Image 1 (cartoon, rainbow, N blue to C red):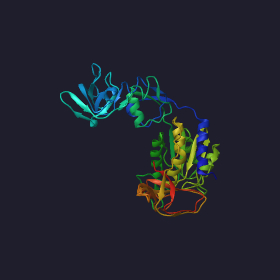
Image 2: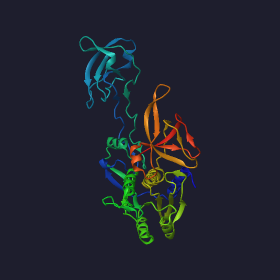
Image 3: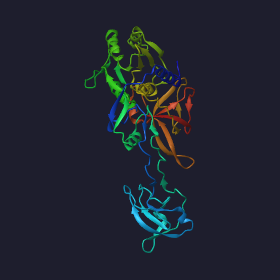
Image 4: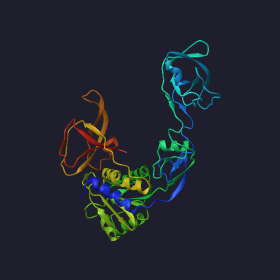
Length: 407
């Protein structure tokens, strides 16, 4: 049985080995957030396109401030979005606002806090400055023609702002991978049904659809597959027409856990069928008919955790991006935690600021009470998972531990 780090790397390696760049399409800038860029974007001019003031104050010649305090003659005012006709000469300055272009002749901006009005149109300056002070030089952020965003970049709000800044109204992006979602089990009914005492509503399909969309995929719900081999096979074959198939349930060792049996009949190649984690140990990853699939455990928390650890990077890569690395922030443990060693555990927890013995705030994590991997209510109260290493039987209160933030 693989450790979760080994299983995750195997997923990434197999997806990378079989990867083919997705088809491309163009979307409007307003629809680009969350998409993956399909072509490099270059600066259409220098950024900033002029020497830009970063403070309200006065544009000056730094040589005029070698001996301070000194008075300079104010010869004009310059606001953002305006241009100044003329140049700053010896003994002169221009009143300037943040974001305005620095006028010719000036090479520094003195902050207004370091000035006082003087007689007439003069200003008294009491602070010497180096050349370039409080100025962002033209082209220092990006030179004209320089690449600013590379293909494969997942577009967030900063990237959207950059695209707007360079005038990119239509954005080339990769097509989202289509991800089939297929929960299994006779005990599952649709959410608008009145379940019998022995039935549960279909939460996994909807949580997986939300996770697929957040990872950059296009969810394709297939309904609920029964615990009957013939119909299950039909629905799995339908799902294998997608770029990726996500099944939930039916991957354990019970009499009616039929998913692996049906996949074998379809000629599936299995890369692993269990991972040393809790929740989520009975996890299947493989390929059938040229398509990758995951058989996720059926209990809701197991489904959600295994998706984040293994299916999310697969979808990100199928979308044309790199897999986002797992990041485990560190926090101080509020209360001792004890578990049997052998599995890496991801336990619902709350991360909050707490006072450090050293006198500053540092994050503190507290494990939440939960009733096992079917306890969705516990996860709704959590904002992270406490990560308990496989070789640790007990974590002591006050110990620094790892957490996985809930996405």
